[in-house]
Amino acid sequence: MKPTVAPYPTTRFRRLRKSAALRAMVREHTLTPDDFIWPVFLMEGTNEENAIASMPGVTRKTVDRVVLAAKEAYDLGIPAICLFPYTAMADRTEDCAMAWSPDNLTNRAIRAIKDAVPEIAIMTDIALDPYNINGHDGYVVDGEILNDETVEALVNMALAQAEAGADILGPSDMMDGRIGAIRAALESEGHTNVSILSYTAKYASAFYGPFRDAVGASGALKGDKKTYQMDPGNSDEALRLVERDLMEGADMVMIKPGMPYLDICRRVKDSFGVPTFAYQVSGEYAMLKAAASNGWLDENKVMLESLLSFKRAGCDGILTYFAPQAARILNG
Ligand code: PBG
Image (tube, rainbow, N blue to C red; front, side, top):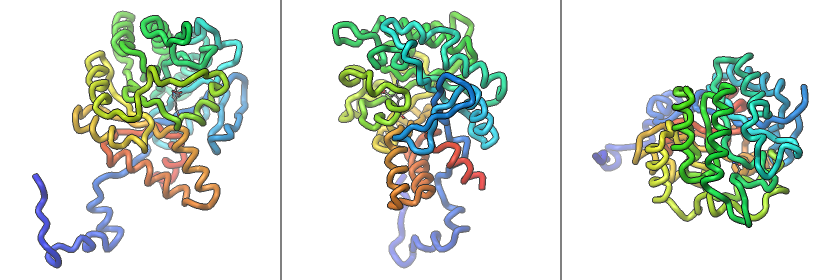
């Protein structure tokens, strides 16, 4: 029903904006630390962190340092952390076998975090790119990204992560059929309570540039990911993908990137009413950081305003590199 608006001066919208108290009373959307999933980058070694030039303030961390980060996140009230490995060059091969090794970087980190901070939810990334010699999310043969063969590998990767103790699996590869295959394997192997947060509407976006630097994939990647990630011109297709992923067993869905795709967030939430997440990706983070470091934008203010926009667009939560910084402010 459309609300009625009596004409001025009966209605004066400024009445409810006149003080912080009144603005707070009628505010429709708010942010809390439990809206955040914090993506972190892993690397080999001990007690070390490396800066990522295109993502100021974000580092790659050794497993022991990621455990400290998980502890920090938990103390800040952030419910989940999401792991991305910067793999050694020797672990990147054509068959991507390291992707499902129980002892790969991600699986070692999962066990270490579960040991030290059992309360925090651990989310993973499922895609072959960190272990693939050519930087693609799937197997490449004669320049083609193979779908069904890749799905088999992704299932192995998912099972290894579930075995290590992951709570939430995040298939980010955009192969067809992967959610159903992963769900069936989880059920048959007894991992009935592992959830899937599907990267459902993942667009072939230039906003992932800094992330590819962070995981060392920029140099390796030949070509682009347009044959498997979505075309930025499409919106109806996102709804069909959400329906497909839900039917195949996804518990939650994601839209990625975030701010340039808030219209998709709104459509997905309105159409399905399922737990809906957006990923404020590396390029979005880099833009805000760059402008702030030039003194052109107020960093904390644009950070919180950008994160709030996701809530307004219907999202239940946001994957964001700003998670700890935003949580600190929200906690006062
Ligand atoms: C790879 C993956 C990417 C991101 C998350 N998982 C990059 C890509 O698809 O090339 C991007 C995250 C970001 O930009 O912050 N499977």
